[in-house]
Amino acid sequence: MEYITAALALILGGGIGFTFARLRGKGERISQRLQEKIDIQEKSLQSLQSKASSAKSDLKAAEANANAKAREIVSEAKLTAQKERSSLERDIARAEEHEKTLKRQEEEVVQRRSAISKKEEEIDATREELSKSAEKHRKALEEVSKLSQEDAKNKLEEAIEKEYSEFFAKKIDLLKEQAEENVEEKAKELISQAMQRYASAVASESTATVVQLDSDDLKGRIIGKEGRNISTFERATGVDVIIDDTPGAIVITGYDLVRRYIAKRSMEKLLEDGRIQPARIEEIVESMKKEVGKMMVQFGERACDDLGISGYHKDLIKIIGRLRFRTSYGQNILKHSVEMAHMAKVLAEEVGADPSVAAEGALLHDIGKALDHEVSGTHVEIGVEICRRYKIRPEVIHCVEAHHEDVPIESPEAFIVAAADAVSGARPGARRESMEAYIKRLRELEEVARAFEGVHKAYAISAGREVRVFVNADIVDDLEQRKLAKKISEKIEQELTYPGVIKVNVIREKRVVETAK
Image (cartoon, rainbow, N blue to C red; front, side, top):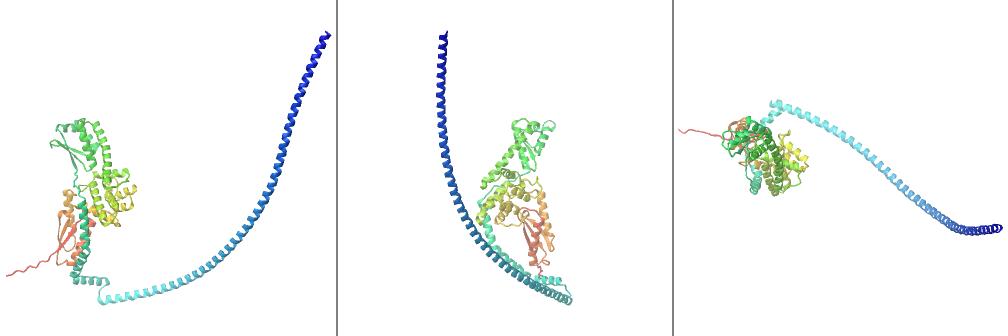
């Protein structure tokens, strides 16, 4: 037992010694590593200390350089400020001198103004004195002659007119011939060239449209039970339908060409379809309205393409197309405008004006007639407003505004548009009017001429293109004859509305009859 105890004690003591020796070796290794790290940190600290000392020396050098540069900048700034101060002092001195000069000039102006005022007062006083003297002299002359100044002037004018009436008439003829000799020939040549280079078919529009029927039996279907079909059709289209004994045809009447065309197309579509009833009628009419709207755009585009005009807004093109369904004295306005545009273009090229402005002005000159029954105002005012809304050039707007001389004509293109309008509207067959309106216009023309003193008879001839006025030769002399023709033409322009131009022909004839026995 003792041996076992001793052995265990020996083994335990050896294990403890071995463990202690192992722990001691490990502690030494740890201590060695710590010492190495301490050495490395000491070296790093020394390196940082050397860098810090180097940075301090660099900072001191930089501070020295900065101070030197700062002193240099300050000295330069002082020098610059001194120079600017000197320049400013010189400018102030010059300004003061200039101010003194202005004050001297102002004093001189005041003195001159005072002198002028005194002279004006003297002149006014002299003028008033002269006026009083002239008034006294005139009154003295009136007392002596028993005539006022106005009466004396009128008597002198009448005496001169009577004595020299033949001379003045011949002088007026001579001056007129000299002024019109070359101008008339050139104008005729240009207009004839324009008309020759552009020829257009003349087509008149009416207030009635005829629709052909395959059979008279269709008339009953169009009327419908108790007239419901025809009533629905007339209400939807806004036209009147006349169904009479005319074989194979019905008549659609109305003043609006658009409505008449829609009605015609709708009726043809209904007859082709065969289903004529109120619901179908309203459906067809609505579809035809959309189709005609598209046609307006096509008509407008075709007119613009024909004239080489581009860039217009689509709504403006549609308004131009609407002119295809407008007439003036039976003349289709769109055809009239396109015809005018071609003439205006040719005339502008001949005289050296702008052809594009003339063509656009002619095309748009009656654009207001597309809306004139829908908007208040004259067609010229409406047309100008439409052109401004769609940003048309000012020179083109002036052509539209001045083509009826509502405003003074200020450009050659506007003159050309007005001339082309007169040529297109006044040529034979271009326009027509009702018999009642025609007779009324002729009667008004004759009444205007007869209203003047000395007129014996007046006759409207050549379809109202000329009025012949016969005067009393004992009352109207040669000079008065010319003045009378001018007065009649001016009154016609002011009071009457007419297409084209009217020629005023005043005839003075004196017959002496003797009898031989």
